[in-house]
Image 1: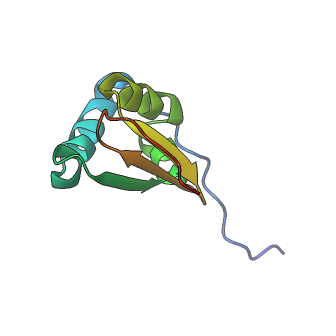
Image 2: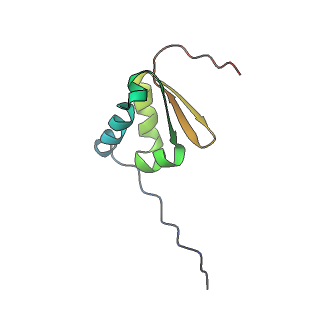
Image 3: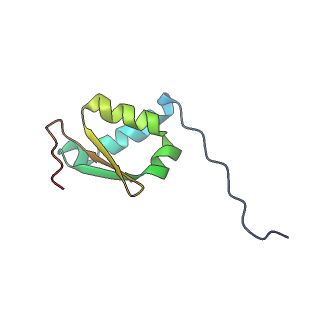
Amino acid sequence: MDMRPAIPPPRPAFPATTAAPWLAKLFGSRSAQSGGVVRRSTAWVEREVGRAAFVAEVRRRGFHLLETGGQFVVICHRGSLRVVC
């Protein structure tokens, strides 16, 4: 008998009307409002709002988005970006 816990299926991405409050809260944070950096797990973003909606919102705001080590890193300003190393 298999004793491993059942893994629930992934939740579908929320429609834009449901994703909007989550995105508004994220981008309304003090860090985002002051031109700082916000970081979220890629799995969490995909579960809560979906990758496409998240990328579209970052792009709409003119911010920069990096993905590394299972994390999304959003640089919340429209200025130029230079990767040093």
